[in-house]
Image 1: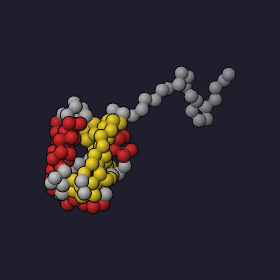
Image 2: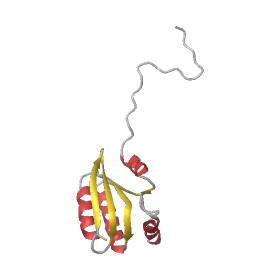
Image 3: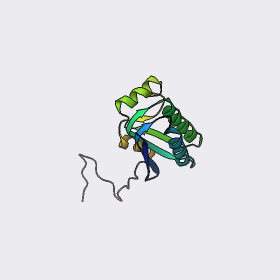
Image 4: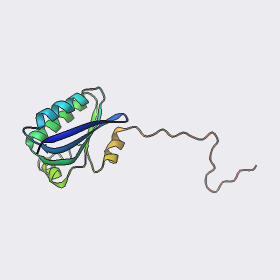
Length: 134
């Protein structure tokens, strides 16, 4: 099976969805595409592994290389959605706890994107149990 990827802007971050096998043949072009995305200063990338059906050592090497390069440029890259089989490959390689993995897209993007600004009301809202004379 081939590897396909979709690169989508997501607010101030970039979401990259992968589908297929990351192996000896597909890892080099994937790495080149991800390095291009990560080349921007302070890039923020969320890499969706949910569609990855197979990952070999070449694929791991490509993803770790992109992770390191992105970090060198003061950027961030996070991974999410790894299927059990792919998760196991990262665990065997000793990388599951070394790289930033998250269970869901929302959890991964929460790390990359700034919290929404909260606008405070003009007048203080009374706390529970307080009364104001009118």
